[in-house]
Image (cartoon, rainbow, N blue to C red; front, side, top):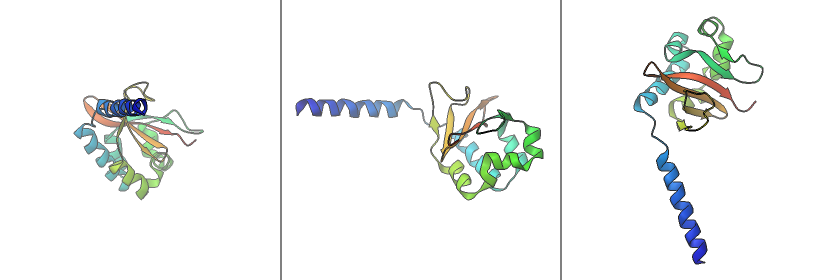
Amino acid sequence: MRTVLLALSFAGAASVALAASEPAPPPELDALRKDLAAAVKAHDLKAIVALSRFPVAFSGYEAPDKITEEDFLSDEIQFSSLFYEGGEQIVTCLATAKLDYQAENPDFPGSPWYIDCDGNEYYFGLVDDKWRFTSYMNVNE
């Protein structure tokens, strides 16, 4: 019994240490993702461009590896591919879901923070000292 309690206390201490090692999202990143959600809700493509780094890296089934600014602004399918027509579920997720940090082996180098919206992952990184939406991955495909 004593061994079990000791093992449980070590496991609890390790999980607390792990949780404490993940950094808190920067306030500027939280503001950016809320601005991005508002732009997506309004279908404001120019505002989305201003909050992003293009080309946006893209990982999804039968999709290009990146979306250029020109393609994003000229082809409505690009908006729909990234933001599912700006539906309420994606907008709410972008604005309120937990920002996760990947310290080791990030899927997109230079974009350590991401939001997972039911397998649609939106990545963020610093670009010229400003947080930007940089990459997208659909892990469901």
